[in-house]
Amino acid sequence: MRDDPTFVEQIQRDLRDVRWLAPEEIRSRGRRRSQRKIVVATVVLALAGVSAAAVAAPGKSPSTGSPAASPTRHEISLDALLQPADLPQRVDVQLSQMGLGEPVRLEDMLGYCRRSQGRSEGWQMSILSRSQTLVRKHSQSSPTDTDSAIMQDVFRLTPEAATQIFASLDDLIAPCAEWLNVGPIMTAGSSRTAEVLHRWSVVQRGFAGDDAAILRDSLTAPRDLETGQRLGDDPSPILLAVVRVGDTVSVLRLGYDGTEAELMQLAVAAAARMCAAANPPC
Image (cartoon, rainbow, N blue to C red; front, side, top):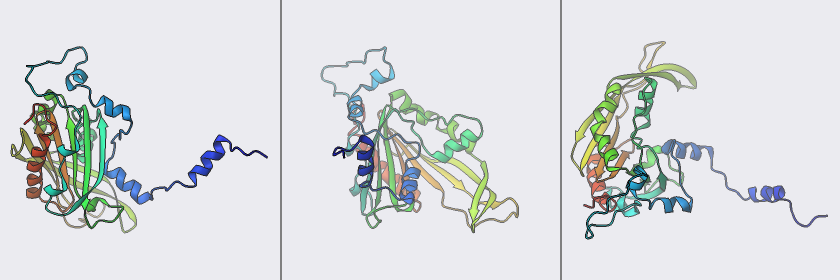
């Protein structure tokens, strides 16, 4: 009889001790970070130190500037993100992640609107990023989307790409200014085909950092295409803020009960925090 287990047997034994996530928790995390690549390898942290100029244009040497100039910042440190003290309610940091070479995805529904019309999503590509989700203090260990106080992504881009986000904002949302989304929905255990009218607009500009904007998606309640009946009341609008400080851009999304005034206040606080990472420094 063998004393040493085979490789397969060892894996089977190890799997007995693994705690698998509940399906609800997997779906919840997937919704909050859909299509996000989570970078955890040590080599990525080393790559985060690569100069933004070198990544953007490998064939060009970055400008050295004057000897007295401040050193170029690369990694986005935690102190460049919103802190719990910046929020009016008590919160915990639920999730913090780093990424490399990801699109600055403003809102999935806006991207879907553009794709449904045969257009590209139109997102600018970042060099590196750091993200976090802040949840209310009273939330349970496995929060849902409604528990989120705020979700924040901070991206480092080339200076040109960072400014282009705001220069192209009107063109980005123009195809979705009035967009009728038709698809199946579940009501009372049955599937129906319904339509929802989305109206995307820029409602505030230039109130924080080097540039800032608030985007709003005002949407109607679903309408059953078979009966013509409206299924409930109009939901709260989708709100997000985009803020730029130097070569960094932050995208902020509130929980479902957040207001436009709260979002503007947090965007101003985020811009002040981003000074810890921006080039040129504040």
